[in-house]
Image (tube, rainbow, N blue to C red; front, side, top):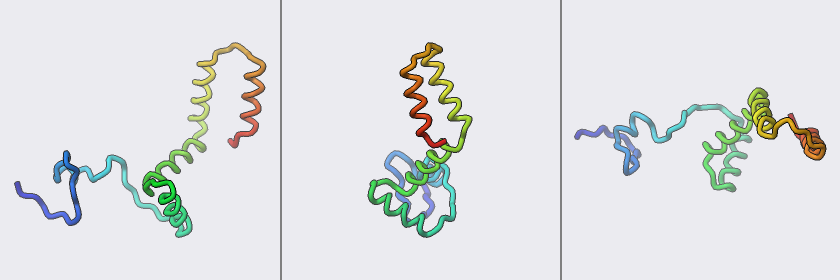
Length: 106
């Protein structure tokens, strides 16, 4: 089999070189973004400290951002939780939930 020359590409043991060339080495979407130098340096420090990749940090940060800024998802989650609890009113649970919600940032 004739294999194309690809510098510094080492396929995983169970993936052929051809599959690596077609699909890339990750299963997720790749994108390029421009960020300020100070943000990048902060990500580098956090990645080293937490022993995670920059990609993982950016992905986790975007997931958290989306979770905070997608109100319909929050509403859906609250509706599911309320459906599980039911309609029965408990004064302690109501007051505890109100206290938590008042302290939460929306």
